[in-house]
Image: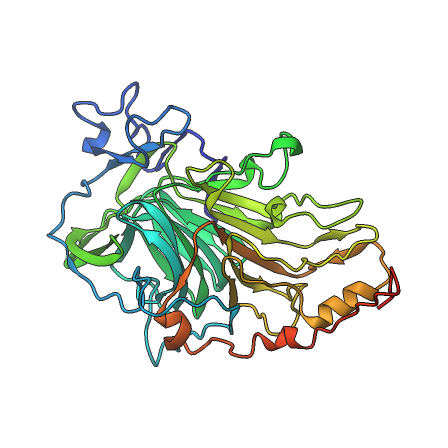
Length: 443
């Protein structure tokens, strides 16, 4: 496959046309009476028309046939994809899942859509306020079918296997240690090259944006120039047997048939587009004197709520970095959080729990449920001679953090059969080091 081309920048005003049709973008206006090459003009709006200019998101697509040309939608079997948060009773315990199993293609073929399983979530797509967290495990490409999400944005985190994502805006190749955001309403199809697994954070009603840097200043964390948006690419392909357009709408899946490929956009312009980001480009901010900073310094993207400083969802990572803090317990501290914390591991060994938390698995620490290092990590970090050291070398862990109180699905607690019921044992061997007659005690 030829190397794909991208345009850099986060939220930029982009313009792109397939080089096979130079001049496909109309000049000086969005919707001429007759578009170049006889194309149809179609606007995709990511925000209300009347949003302030600084937050208004929309793109104009110039396509061979408009997306309205399809048969009526019918219900589509969705299996373990759900927005039913009342399937099982609330579950406040610390939860950990072993790596999610990927069926063999010769036993059960799953593409990206049929391989989506919801593990937890909160809120409601109809009121446009909430999130869902999904796991995808697939082994075959989407053939003559695409998906679009009417409910919100997908943030896709591959853990095993590359994804070639075809979109109306162009092609995106996403590898493990990269992420991709497909925003609301954008049609896409996923090609895979073997057994594939990853995580999806879905947010309703808002879009991901870069966090404010405040006292950090103008630069740092995820820099806008490192986000990549695809260039225009089209296919003019008829599908007499029917091309399936799958819509996720109000938490349900529906399918409509049409006889042509939806990836027929010859040119487009605007600031509403899919994008990808390589996590290796993250500029880590860390403590260089003492104490352990809050994990918010590792935020890559945020989806803000209506409350200032509170996110519906943050996407944070814990990449390789230097630890140099003096007189400090350096791993993550023991914590009870008003937020919900879902963690996944792309590769390596997470510093606070080197055993049990494996790549392709996950943990959930719900609102106000205590969590922190296991016994072995605590004892080691409390007694080790402090010196500058590399933390998390060869590792990439991430966290979906939300202000919403998460409900776990029946699939997450039972059906997947990957819940680690021994997770709580990792803290049972913690012991008291309290000595009332000594102010400071060496462990």
